[in-house]
Image (cartoon, rainbow, N blue to C red; front, side, top):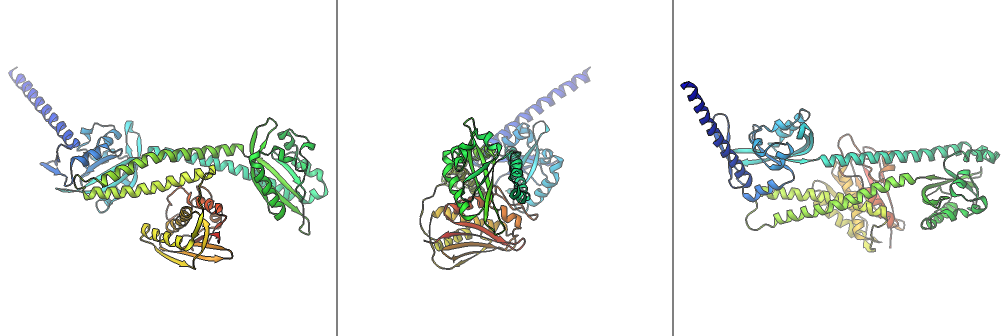
Length: 553
């Protein structure tokens, strides 16, 4: 009985001692986290070692604690020496319990190889990669892992910054779904038009022999169809036209179609129609037609000329395909882009302001490492600012609100300015200015500089081995041509046809291009608004030449 009492007293004493140690440990961790001390002690198995940060101060730790990213410091054994509250929240664990654990505990098997490779490289140089992190309820969190070496009194450690990419990944997934839907809708529209064109070509000879065969065909397709004489007078509509408009033959004969075109679209439609009649080129325009119930719907109009053996136009065959649903989908995407761009500008501006405050902080010297981090953050913010500006430009283009203030511009000076900027931004590349002479055009300086910098940026991006880029300006008749020549991966014929489309990017097996594929689309719109032309030459594997031409003053 006496032995049992001694054992109980010993256990009670040991329990009190352990409780006191636990309270001391929690107090120590809280003091380190809040910046009250500059050191921590880690048991290495044989003894206790003291770790102190050379550049530690309270301001720095408070900054880390307030970050939206998870921040962890580990030693060469992978043990966590420090963790901020964000990381503890990400892995759903009390902050005090993360200290001393192996960081690999939170890495799922699927990310082990990437993590170990990044960890090995991080001791030599800064690196980053995407990994998965085990979060709440064992759910995997996609993260961007940034590794930087950190010098402690006792040796090197690693600073790990984990940025949660869940929202970004979901946004990308939603955008991809919308893009696929839009592409599918576009393919359906193109397929319908191509099928109709093929059908018309196959039946051309028969149509000369029997107009009734044509009427039978036209009345059994979903599109509205018409034929018009070389003078422009419409002499036939199919049944779908009368069903849609609710008008009679007398109401819409000759030029009666103008009654159902939306007033805002009438001038553009008429001008393009008359231009095609004069040139004999294919007529194509998007406009709104009024339905029998007074509702306007968007249509894609396309007409091709049919010629006789002498090459003279006998008559035109046209179609109007309902694209209202596709337009709405495009508007939804453009609205999303516009809203997202504006929403991103506010936190971006705030973040820039905070970085400027850190840079201009004069109360005490800012650690060199912090200055380096601020510089890297500013570079990342500038890239994000460019993407946001591109998104806003696309939204303005779609809304017809891209602003221009024209003046007389010396193209030679503009090119020199752009090359100087490029040499600063891309120091690893070699730029050559092949300037013919002074060329003056009427245009907007900022927008034309934007075009030239877009072409230069594109040349640099797709020239990973040969770093030489030539910018050439020369006279072409009554125009000046500005060309940006690279010696990179080049373009296939299919890529050259699509390179100026919105969101299109050239993909190569050797590397993945960054960006959203909007730079060339925006550049093309700017040049069109300057009454110029833009194009590209090149071969796959032999580089590319992007150029634009503007009328000389």
